[in-house]
Length: 352
Figure 1 (cartoon, helix red, strand yellow):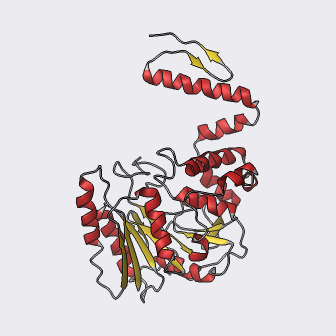
Figure 2 (cartoon, one colour):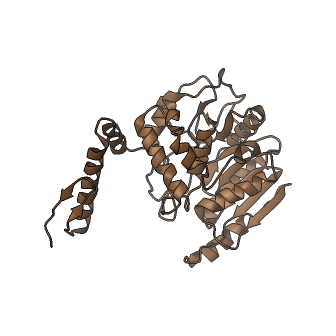
Figure 3 (cartoon, rainbow, N blue to C red):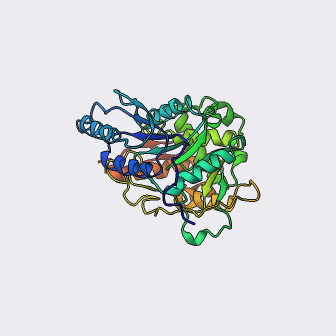
């Protein structure tokens, strides 16, 4: 049986995060309207001072969510200042879980199927007191040929945040600035959480940027890598539906983190799950599916190759090679020629 629309209002609280996209906000709100949650929280980040159109677009998006036409308690957090794509969503989630024990989270570009809500609500209740489970995701990036499980969902070590749900007990562990990072890396605790060297390097590289917060790709524009870090250091499990329950509407030039219109997940089709749910017999990570997800979505082939080579080359030699290739790329890109001094290698180029 496919659930297209719930017969009674959804009692699980829902948090909707909006910004400056009235059209996608309207589509997501229409999907929420189908399940008529009795509690709806709406958090809106403020307009960016350097983007003239933001004032108008933010106002239009807020006007869209003023159109709540079902019996519902609405709680709003409309900010005047812009906190950005990192602090904005994460602080809104903290605000949400300060008031609720559990809930569903949707951003203004994440369009859910109707069964997404039923899926989250049932599993929030089922695993409410099971501290091994830290998240219920709504997205499945796998092609249909790679599926085939007898169950409605599986367990993963990877987060999925295009429509998801969690509990206060899990979110209270969240740390935007990753205060435990230095101790965790100094003692190499994370290394044992990965099966391959390229996974270790990939996440260590990203987590360091999230911790330092000094680049555009750091925590100033994201909040979810910090959540991945928290789930990792707490050995938290993530539930992934056997079918994809959310499609992302936010790919394109106006996006912050999904600018590539054909980026990973751009063509995900929204599906409906069959009910009653078939629960896995054992709570165990499906490592095969995790590895496939990492290799196909998280890490490029070139990056994996580089990380694999690094295992077999002495570090000074590897660092020299890395410096050489980075410098060569900069030279070819800029057309400039200069003397480059590496800690391990000296190279002389023609001078223009």
